[in-house]
Structure formats: C-alpha cells, structure tokens
Image 1 (cartoon, rainbow, N blue to C red):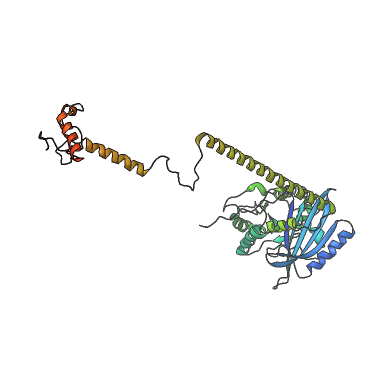
Image 2 (cartoon, rainbow, N blue to C red):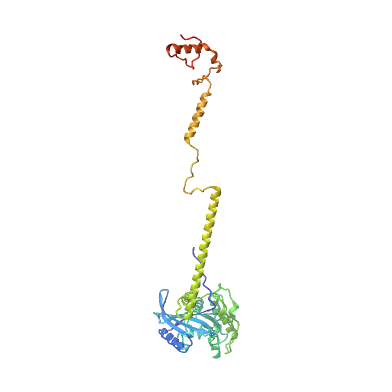
Length: 422
C-alpha cells in the first residue's frame, strides 16, 4: 500500500530563506571579500568559512552573525555549490534565523554575503533566467509561459508577482517593484510582466495553479497551488497604475503574503537543521548557557529516574506484604513448578486390609448349603448352657484321658449320633 507523502513543516516566523544562482565561477571570492569588509566596519560581529556537505555533495559554507534591533542576534549560513559542468553557474542557498520574529524592515541577509552592486551576477533565481531586482517579461510562447509559471510555483523559494500591463507603459511604468519594498523583501521578489495581449494566455497558465490576474492588475503566485480552477483573490490587486507612482495596495498585498504562515520550500528544512545543529560562531556566554541547559536537562532526567526507582521499590514492598498476608490467612501457596503434595493418612495397603475384613465378615454371614463350609459354632438350637446338660459325654471324655492318656475328641463340626464310644 502506497504511503501518503509527509506534509512539509511550516516555516517559523524567525527564519528568512533564499535561494539563487551566481552566473559564472568565483562566487567564493566575492563572498569572502564582502564578509571581510563588513567585519572591518563592525556591521557584523564575526564570520567563518568551512567545508560542508549535504547529501554527499560537497559545498563551501559561510557563517555570519550580527545584531538587529540592538539586542537580537541573527545567525545566517550561505552554502555555495561547485560550478555546474555545463554552464559554470553556482547555486547558493541562504538561511538566516533571528532570536525573534523576523521584521521586514531589518536589513536583508543577502546583502551581508553578496554586494548590492548590480554588476555582480549573483541575483538569479534557480528557475529560468529570472532576476530578483529587475522586471522579467513572460515568454511569448504559450507552452513556455505555462511551464515557467508552474516551475516557479513548485521549485522557487522566491515570492513571484505577476503584473498585467493594461497598455504599454512608458519609462515611468517600467520602474521595478523591488526598490519600493521593505529591505527584507527586496531580494526575495521576482517580478513578472505580462504584455496587454497576454491577458488570456497568462490566466490560462494560472488556471491550474489556482490563481487569476485581473486585467490591468496583479496577483501573487501561490507557492502551494490549490486545486485546478480554484481561485483565491486574497492576494490579488485589481488595479496597478504604472505611471511612476507608488503602488501602495500592491506593496501591502506582497508584504501580507510574505508574513503569512507557509510551508518551508523544498529542501529548506534540511538547510535549517544544519544551521541549528552545526553552528560554529558561538560566544563564551552562549557556550556557558548551553552547558547550563544541558546540565539542567541531565538533572531533570536523573530526578525522573530516581522517582521511578522509588515508585518501583514501593510497589515491590507492597506486593511482598500482600503475599505474606495471604500466606498467613490461607496457607502456604504451592510453588508453580512443584506438584501438590499427597494427602496425609491415605494408603493403598490400609484400603486393602479394610476390604479383606469386609470380605471375611461377609463369609461369616453366608447361610449353610451355599457350597461354602460354615465356621465352627454352636449347633442350631443349642445354647452355651445346653452343652452342659449332657454330663455323660463329659464323663466319658474324661475317663478316656485317664485310661490311655489321651482320647480322640470328636470334631465339633460333625454332629453327634448319640452312641457311646468304647
């Protein structure tokens, strides 16, 4: 069964991400020169350069820290990849995080690493040949226009604004939008211009992305496209006057979109994790504070383990007490592995003797004529005193003993026939 993709994490309001391309090699030298310049003028507190790696791909990493609003620290990291084998361009990724919510009026982190000179070609988006600080014309070919806007919504980290020109503007109408924005947005905006005749074509391309540009107006391209045909007019401006005046409503809409909670761009979560976990420019106070936090966490874990041990010991003691009380009241419990002892006073030999006594008693009570000899006893009708009523038998028996010393005594089992023995 296929697993559903994990939803990307929401971008924290303290983070400022950007991604672009530098045309041509030598990007590391430009960044080194810029960081040294700002360190010498005390614009930044410190900077560092080291070799980094992400996903097995090596790159050059630069760190810098500075203060904003007098006491808030900003930590930023710039990663520059190796030159591309085809055209020699170098992609770069920049993530900055402050100790508080990001204010768009703070200086742009891009200007800490890159010079603001327009002659240095660092300000290109990763999609197409788009530039941050200039006007970018939409392609004239329909398929190319549609493919460009789709790639911008899916792969770019920048904020894309599409402006439709109701009529061909003059020189005053060709003023870029970026210089009019707050410093924290100037290097994250890509401005697209649609010619008057591209109104329907541009909306046809925006249809699948859940957006629509009004005629003579503007719209912010959503970074997470909605369902096909589902429009959101919350970040659309109906009228933009390209007469050199400041487009207040458009600037307010772009700033509001930039401050909205949105998912992190693709790949930004890993870069942010590297910034937090592999930060090198720490002060002595920060190291001491980090050691205290770790010590407090260790003490808390140790206290929890001690409490758990005490609870376990108390439960064991209660179990032993309950077992002893049961033994006192109901007897000793047999061991689970021992067989129950035999009942005392019971023996097979004793049972056999009892059965023999019962059998002998039954024989004594059996009547004559059943084939079994009857045990010796008084004859029927005789009594113990009846035998003494025949003195002649007793006298003859006594005389026989006197004559021969012995006399044969008739068996008591044979009945007497009444004749005298000679």
